[in-house]
Length: 345
Image (cartoon, rainbow, N blue to C red; front, top):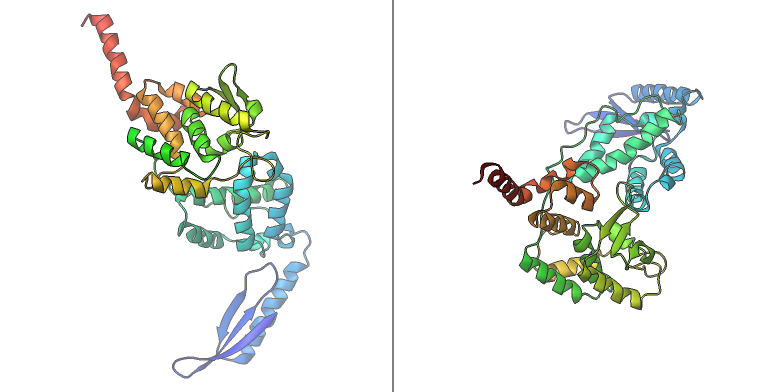
């Protein structure tokens, strides 16, 4: 549908701005000094868009981005881990609101760059890249499997550069203050969740999704079955963590260590965590930094990188290299013992 608006320029001249809109396509607009030229251009543009509509072999013109997202939700999302589904669902909703009204072949690199700029205004580069990983996978499916599109508009877009891994861990005083604040929290889950996270180096979602069946009190082991990389792992439990878990087990009638308000497990501790963090006087400390704290104390206690990687569930030792500087003291002691054995010094 075409609309023509007459406008006056600052110099007093008259121009005619014409805009053509069609479902699934970005609006097309142009400005002319004559109304007749504007009408001619509108007719030509509408004819071009209509012609495009009558080629059924052009699947990309027939399928909307929203349709691709919905198919992805039906066919691909159920295969992902529960934690990933929760995180990615909000990203899919954002893309649907941003591009859902466009046909697949109407999405351009420029539109995607504009979307990236919007995301980067409030999100970290790594999070922006996560948003683009999701939409890129959808377009890849549309090209390779669904045959709705010949070329993905994301194939030439590079990722944003991410800063090096951040290591923030608690000092002994900070640890004491945080545990005290968590113990005083109104949340029934926060203190135990923090204790388990510190005692095992597990991620928040790994901790919150624990079932009592995952804990072997006899052998003092916990099995994390819902993990980021999809591989289950077992971690020994210290006596301190076991004591708190036993206390909770005696009071619980749920399948989950951290049950939700209705069914399933607790999904979020953000409000109670934010209050406890503030009371403890911690600035810029994230729940994920509890994992860094556990790994850092392991390193300073003499664990090598392979041992730390095993506890954290890293597939690649490169992920564990951010703790290298903390293992130097232990490594120096090993080298000195080796030299004394070899050289007698």
